Length: 389
Ligand SMILES: Cc1cc2nc3c(=O)[nH]c(=O)nc-3n(C[C@H](O)[C@H](O)[C@H](O)COP(=O)(O)OP(=O)(O)OC[C@H]3O[C@@H](n4cnc5c(N)ncnc54)[C@H](O)[C@@H]3O)c2cc1C
Image (cartoon, rainbow, N blue to C red; front, side, top):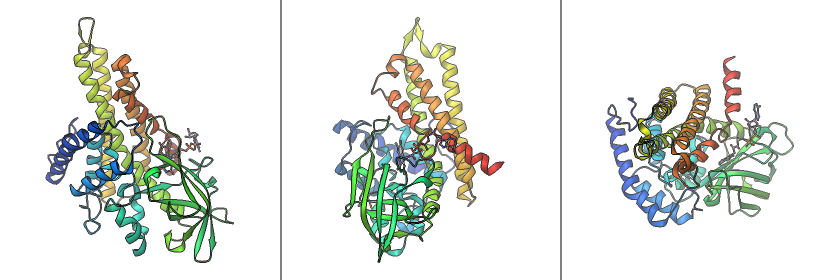
């Protein structure tokens, strides 16, 4: 796939048409919709606003577009999905996370679909794909982040159900989700974990406002379980498979976060070029200064390197290869290099870039988080080294 800062996807007519439609939707509908409502990345989003985007994105064929046709998608390859995801964040749209279903939708459910029974598909996952219900994924706890095995949320078998007790934190999409995929330790075991589909309006379950991360986005919530009864029919896969299901989902999600970061970095690059053209210092635009041009060259090179690695890995995954190591490499490379891009964008913007609410300042804060979120850079390095050495 050729690289330009505004990729043309000439070699793939289906993708080229999808990208053109997506750009039209983003710039002619979604961004004006956000402006009319005064939405910023830090606005606390309500369900009707999100449902509007889910429904419209579904009508246009974007919501769940990567799913197989029998599930209502267009069976996109991962390479194609990565291209669309990059376009979303490169647009700067506040609600870009809700167009393909990253935030509460089909992409959040991700690869767990393959473990779902007929009942679970009908009651939980198909309504998510249709944009009628929303879900979150909850594995992290206050004292169990990278080291997920320290989790203390337990599932105790009780007749034809399980009783969940414990607390999950930082579940993205929890404030507007209908159900969660919860990974819990089986009571009385050291190392057996299971995954459950949990209705968030069940007795014994409370959704609490979570901490607001440095991006200012208010999309995380905590889940508190106090003897919450979960029917046995809501067990995903088999007991003991919870970490495999959870971590399997995370591996692919690690790769799929990358194009979103690359799109945000591309947006920071675009804004920096524009600013360098118009900002005059010492009688000339910033763009005339070699120091600034070198920064822009470094930024474009970082974006190119990250994109090349991600697309190559996505292409290998499309061919059925196991990409566990490469997904870690891509997330490490992308999180670190896109954050560098954001840092240079702030530098080029001077005090404007340091001003709360400026778009590059927002991108900087958002990209900073991804050196931790969905796996810290250190944990990626551990995994890469463990696999290769
Ligand atoms: C905005 C946001 C959204 C999130 N969304 C979700 C979600 O939807 N669902 C969910 O379950 N979780 C979610 N999380 C949690 C996220 O995945 C965790 O924050 C992440 O896994 C790291 O865990 P921790 O923050 O507890 O850090 P810790 O694991 O405590 O790590 C602290 C530091 O120690 C380092 N460290 C730890 N162990 C090692 C080691 N063995 N070797 C080297 N260094 C090490 C880490 O790299 C890090 O620098 C979210 C977090 C945020 C901020």
